[in-house]
Image 1 (cartoon, rainbow, N blue to C red):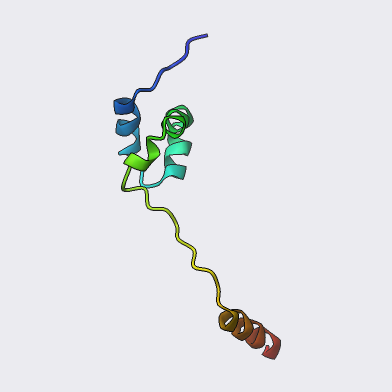
Image 2: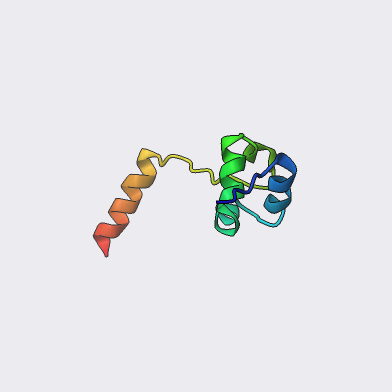
Amino acid sequence: MSQKLYDYDKCYEIAQQCSSSSEMRKLNASAYNAARKNKWLKDYYWFVKKQHNPYTYEEVYESLFICQEE
């Protein structure tokens, strides 16, 4: 059984073809896993992480109020 070894440069080259880490995982799971295990994903600055801002009480209350009116 042959095993491909992915070094930093090879993983970086594959990552440049992708716009997100999930896309890299779909394109080449082995390269993604090597980059993840070696903590190289942080070097791929173009992989933008989704940011979720917590909801405020007022936003939740308003959305519930709007749903009840319909």
